[in-house]
Amino acid sequence: MNSKLYVGNMSFNTTEDALRTAFGQFGSVTDVYIANDRETGRPRGFAFVTFSTAEESKLAIEKMNGADLDGRALTVNEARPKEETGGAGRNFSSPNRRPGAFQARGNSRF
Image (tube, rainbow, N blue to C red; front, side):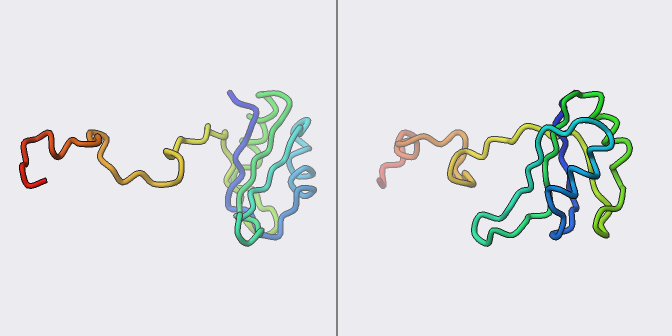
């Protein structure tokens, strides 16, 4: 199990110190990252909390999932690796599409 946790459904007023205090009772918190919107700089409502061991993070999931923090019931689970998005956002092209493929099918209009 990973020692990094995803913490969702957070209040926009929750601070890094509040997260360290709340999760610190279950073990040694090595890192806290609160995600902020790139354009506005405001919190996005989720964070990542990293513990020094997997056992500590498992205990924190059991105790903090559904727990109230700043008036919100937290969603806490193991953080998953970020999925590749293909670079600059959505990729609308077909996976079978390659340059010149339309002409290669014998369509003589182009």
